[in-house]
Image (cartoon, rainbow, N blue to C red; front, top):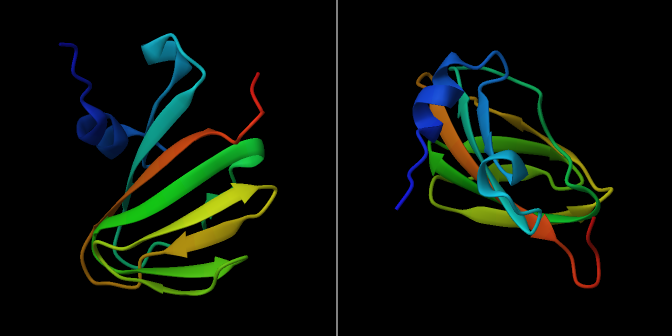
Length: 111
């Protein structure tokens, strides 16, 4: 079994994210993003792109979502977004937040 240190990579990344995808898996079928946000951090873009779908999960902390979807994404809750739609994540809290994005190709699409 091969494991991937997503948390550590996200913590040292300039973007605050670690992408587990085709480069690591050898497959374009699916991907996962582990994201960390500092307290009060704003404007983390979520935009799957044409032919892609994503599920965004708030793992630690509540997130404010604006754009195609708007509202509060409570810790342990998720939403689905697809295609050209986009939204922005904000961590309104006083401590760090963590989210996971699981993505893949929509029905009948691919690279």
